[in-house]
Length: 126
Image 1 (cartoon, rainbow, N blue to C red):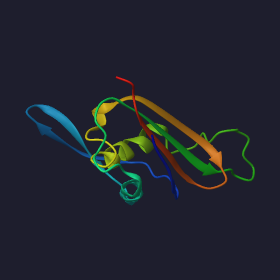
Image 2: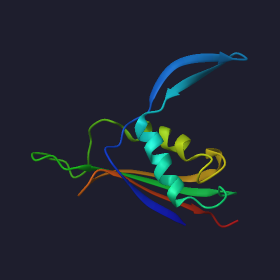
Image 3: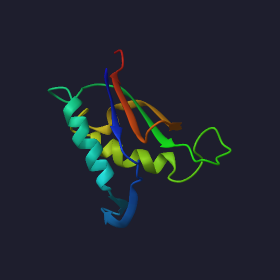
């Protein structure tokens, strides 16, 4: 199992323009410096070779609790889908060969003592 925390304010990945390849529309993602930073920290915790086979990946994004918040979890933007897109791409080639290997994906937004993302990646039993 690989597990680490990346401090900093989580940023979403924005979808840029769309290109057409062989009749298919493919959105181009504009990865933020946040995604590159997560990739940099992941390299410090990466195995010698990217993992093979099916994987379980958990991303837990933490935000600081506002002084006058009434919710127990952050219900503000960015949404989980946009937070995770860039990180799945950023971790590719570092923790795993291809994000298609991820067969179990856990996503959470929580309030924490510091902002960042907890990343946990583990191999699934064959």
